[in-house]
Length: 144
Image (cartoon, rainbow, N blue to C red; front, side, top):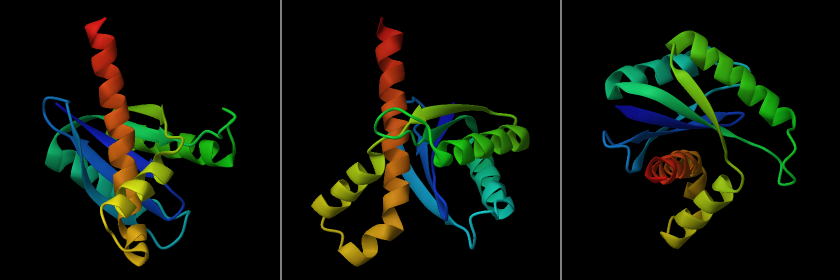
């Protein structure tokens, strides 16, 4: 079994995949789209990756505000979640993604990635952080 992690943004979707033992998350790619409303090609690419990696569950970053309220991005994310469930038939878990993009930027900076190139990788790294957070939390509940 593998789990897919997604960081859904207005122009991109970062994609990460777990290892078969559900211990680690690896970045796979960033799916780019020409406009925020054009999701058909994005969903098709995600479906291809689901088939390629034999994914059985999706963890989708849920962009709550720092004060724990839900804004416009949360509504768009919920709609994307519904689309994913309809297209793939897989369970989609919404996972709090607060500060993952900032943390991804920090990882890239510390790794020596030049500022002008960070935008290319930040969503994929954010997807890794979202998925890894979920995997770690699952290990914690399994041990209890």
